[in-house]
Image (cartoon, rainbow, N blue to C red; front, side):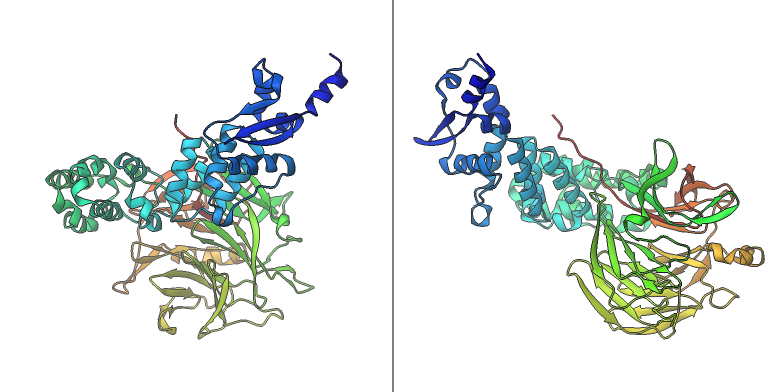
Length: 556
């Protein structure tokens, strides 16, 4: 048969009969878009000879939408998306890959705390790995919100056990696991009483802090089951001996560095790289280019890098010290897909400002304005509502302050430690910072276990300050309960670098003496391990560590 005849055959109309009604489409289009129809047409099946097939157990309206998609690339979605479940199932059955991608894109837009568990089950049933991975990471990271959904309360015990037993689950403590099981049990006590024992392995005593055990033993769930009570009493004794490295739950994280400077041929040059720690090669390697965000990358740009939940925000800065070219765009790196986007603009220019984040808000304060005027203004950006709010001004005009937000309070460091109550919106002075040189912020604060830990901080501009003051700088903490400030002992093998970061109960820093990248445990400030070398990470770079989930595969 000649090639022209083959083309003529492909141009023939193919008829699909559904519910007694007929749909027609060119064979060439069906062959191109659908593996199902391609296999049918390439076989010796009767349908390939008659150019007609009857599909059972399908709806005409659903197949009509899919054939319309094959012809036009447009997916017809009914009001409210009521037909999308059936369209997705049919697209999978007919192996129309482009339609499957469009359906997946639709479902991703509906992904939230209420839908993620249902979408995870739905995508698992249809073997939609991309959608499954997105739904699973959402359900794991937003556990505190997801556990309040109706889909969570209606989970089968096997599904619940698998979900709560995941080491990647983002729970505040194991008490939250007990709260979640109790809510699930209370949803149907008569039908679930006998199932409580199956959920015992979901609780991990090795993750319980000593001060939490009383709350665990007095929890409502424990009084519902003698087996649970016996298990908790036994695991408590074992828990006393557990070490930080034996924790079960650990959020998967990604480690990035931003900017800093590199030394080439004895000269310091600003680093243009955002580097990612490569765990397989144990070193930092270029990941993104700062020039993809900032048209010019120079020294002393004065931008801030802030982690808010699972995302990283870049705010403020100046491209040119001579032209006063200020950066107004605020960029976000999404912690799920690692894609950058502009999310908002500063209401007024600022550089060398302070910045910190809560779970949903970015706080910026102080810094230099456009004409080197030192600022006392404070602003809050709500990342959910995309809204800026002016907060009361600081009692001082400060540039390069350090800040941390916790317990509805904003703590800001410079020559004093001051606090803004985010409920009463009043500033108070907590104490003077223990630094003998005015206008030198020498600590980076982090919140952990109801204390603010102040990590030593010296940047490249303070090299002259090292030999005079380095011996006086030490790790310290302030208890938010008592207000007591004290030094914190730590391993002699740790020398904190110019910048440190705290995430998931661990601190990360580049050892000043060896240039090795290390991490340690916040619980006892013991050295966890030397992770690797500084590699391509710039000196005096920002270090950020934030949750980043792997691609989850559907288990067969």
